[in-house]
Image (cartoon, rainbow, N blue to C red; front, side, top):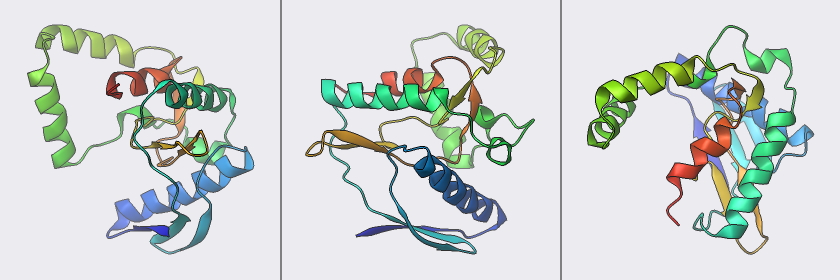
Length: 173
């Protein structure tokens, strides 16, 4: 079975191309990524990898080990897109609504949230980050005992431990 990425406009076409380039680079770095089966203008096909429930000590250990490996990598300049803040990419309407709902539903007062966010955005970007290190991008293969990392399009520089800190609050168990 395979996974197909399809573009429907210029933005998603750039996103699919970037995903393909990042996956191929990550595989040369021996990162656990699905193999690229084929790609062309506006499409990408990868192998399908196991995606079991992301939980338990073994999942967390495997995910954190990969996050540490990513942090030590030096991607080529063409993947880093200098001057672009990969951690603050524009979100679509649905994503902005989801984020607003999370903020408003949080027990954290809005003023405190804004202050923390401002300080977080000012942190020095000293290490390589996946940029979207979440359970739905850190796929667990429980039978093999390892993870596969997908959705590399947010690859960039970020603050120390951004990837583990992104993963941690989203774990259910």
